Length: 325
Ligand SMILES: Nc1ncnc2c1ncn2[C@@H]1O[C@H](COP(=O)(O)OP(=O)(O)O)[C@@H](O)[C@H]1O
Ligand SMILES: O=P(O)(O)OC[C@H]1O[C@](O)(COP(=O)(O)O)[C@@H](O)[C@@H]1O
Ligand SMILES: [Mg+2]
Image (cartoon, rainbow, N blue to C red; front, top):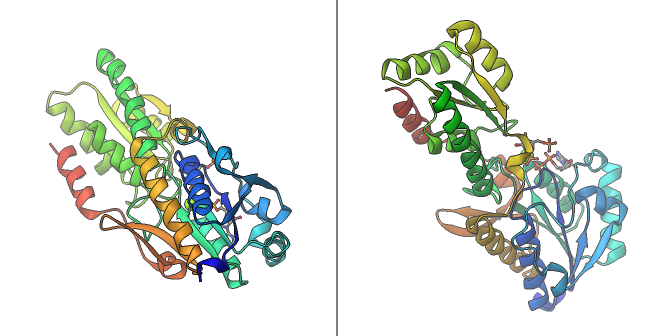
């Protein structure tokens, strides 16, 4: 069975995430260790459509385990959403003699992987996104680094906010998901957090929290806003209007997506990369690598994408407790 797989491709797609390089390295080196050739596909699905490739050997992934970003570049491709684009990608796989593709990315990337596997190409997905919004896995590569970067930035803001007794509104990434915001808010001891999963209620989520903090003796306030919940600037304006404070708004933006990956991200990326190659080498397809209950496993992509995920109610309740006093 294992000998059937001779050559695979690896790509990164969607928003980049720290640890993607460590994952590429693991895919390439574990494939080589099995006698499988590995081809790098640049610029995600659009690279597969256009045959944008680079040869990968062991040396090609030297000195990248500690680097953020992705050496293969990443992209979002509208063409790949079309049947014609997907067929072109299939043709590239046939032309290059690829027996499988490892796609490192988020949920969108996995939907693309589904389409490709329906067309007969073996694909295994690895979750790489700072949003941690992939339903079937407890962890996505990049989350830990992004969270620690955001925490470090907010700690710096807190110093100056305390000195000036100000209110700070910090917008963190998460277009559709509040995992990062909630985690970071808990880690910095925020006064309030706004996430897209909870309907926006300024009075309850912001005014009451700031009031309680003030009555408890605080004179500086940290409001963490996931970009998908509200705009940090709009929240700042509302605080100024309704409470008479003079908040400073900081949008952390892409700062959160860069930087050297934490040890946790490097280790998870390495474990997931090795597992993806094992799954492909065993001749399996349409799988996604997941971290569940403390173990790395693989799951059917359709099944994985069908699962419903919401913010952990226990985490939300803890945050409510900590901001309610
Ligand atoms: N339903 C879909 N069908 C086919 N391809 C898709 C689909 N959704 C997303 N993709 C492809 O995956 C790419 C990355 O998805 P995106 O949502 O931008 O990032 P992420 O993978 O990080 O969630 C898209 O640009 C598109 O090429
Ligand atoms: O890089 P862009 O296009 O500005 O996208 C920003 C978005 O990408 C993310 O960083 C990651 O999202 P995806 O993994 O789904 O691409 C979001 O948190 C953020 O909203
Ligand atoms: Mg996504």
